[in-house]
Image (cartoon, rainbow, N blue to C red):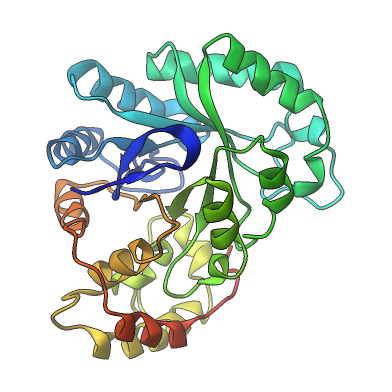
Length: 321
């Protein structure tokens, strides 16, 4: 496993982190707690030292599984979690008030709950699960974050940028209040390269890349006949003709496989790691097999400039959420 500087935090994080939404169980059907525990331990065995979770993942269940891991391992594992919007609006609605999503007492209360779920005294990175850059100048939310930092309950602050809105963090980043951002970046959605990534490099902000597999399409596992259990959010994400569109796009990528990447999943992860502003990539991993395959891509090998340029032709910006 290779490690990268995590912006201004002073932390070195593993290139492959652990995306812990799926192990929460809700909205991702078929999770098995015992297999999730084995997968978490295997990731640490392979050098993973960063986990991203959220209070909303399984209504705290994901955090509680991570608690078990932290109690059983001696390695230093950095944990980022997230506060869900009190308003229940995902993503943040334009023109909404920050006090509806993140009022002072709510921020404190959610952080205290995550501390209990995780079984820790300090959260390494506390994030807002949605964001609107127009909230930057408001004081109440920042007063709460500042108080939590002063009390030693959180170390750093970040945001999870709304789906496919990478520029919706630049005002906050310019304010100096932002330590990390989490953003969608993959072969299809390369939009963070335009403004966000150069901005983060210039301002020393850590970058967490989520959805490197486009919710599974970039692993090649989605077919025109794919079906998911009731309650699984992928029924909505890949609804209607979307599976047919995905298969057509993914089939075009298969011709690029070879010595630089043998599988689509490997190609997707190596692409996400190819940008120098990226600190860590957090694929969802629910099985030991997934962990072994994903962690194996952090080996110091990089995609050639030729292949990266070719992948630039496969941009497909759209919002399936």
